[in-house]
Amino acid sequence: MKLELNAFDAVIFDMDGVLIDSEPLWKIAMEHVFREVGSTLTKSDFQKTVGLRIDEVVRFWHQHERWTDVTPEKIERDIVDRMQSLIKEHGKPLEGVPEMLKFLSDKGKKIGLATSSYAVLIETVLDVLDLKSFFDFTHSAEHEAFGKPHPAVYLTAAEKLGVLPSSCLVIEDSLNGIISAKAARMKVVCIPEKTHHTEPKLILADHQFSSMTELLTAML
Image (cartoon, rainbow, N blue to C red; front, side, top):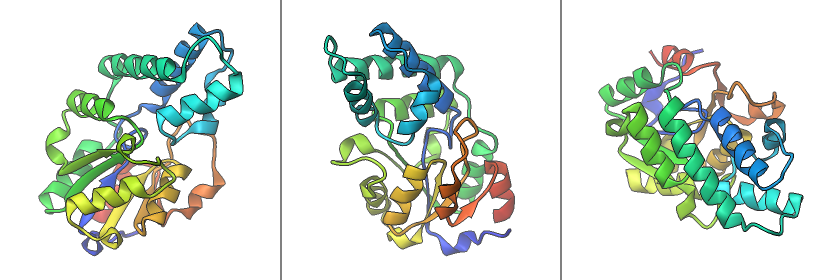
């Protein structure tokens, strides 16, 4: 399937599960921190909160588990700290990511990043992966009133990149991310994250590919 890159002025990437194989790391970090407060939640439980901001994830599980001796804010800080350590130790770009970013840069396309992860994790990921120089603008949903699936993070990214939302192509891996980008009136490519449960609703994306390398081939 051919994907016409000329139809777009900018390409905006999600981060977790798109640039970096971090979804397993999130599950490790959450399981570790939750266990410290006496929870029996496991990695399979966390499928319910894929694509949400970490504060929303923690609030969900804090209410679900009815923790009384620890605040959501403390759990959130501990998870983010754990994630930074895991990214520094294990972080690596997903297949085809450096090649895709170089291709888009050579084509003169504006490149953005819009993620539910906090800004401190954006910095950590781009430093560890040595990808910072490719991005014209990066944005965290922590700076928005609402995270994905609300479109705010993508609308802000388009505004800061100086392009119309309708001229943006988004690369996502989760249903919440797809809904967010579609609500922003952007075209969406889905590259499903391999550790997620199969989600039939991912067909809401305009295009679906198995890897960044396959997507890049479709653009050539």
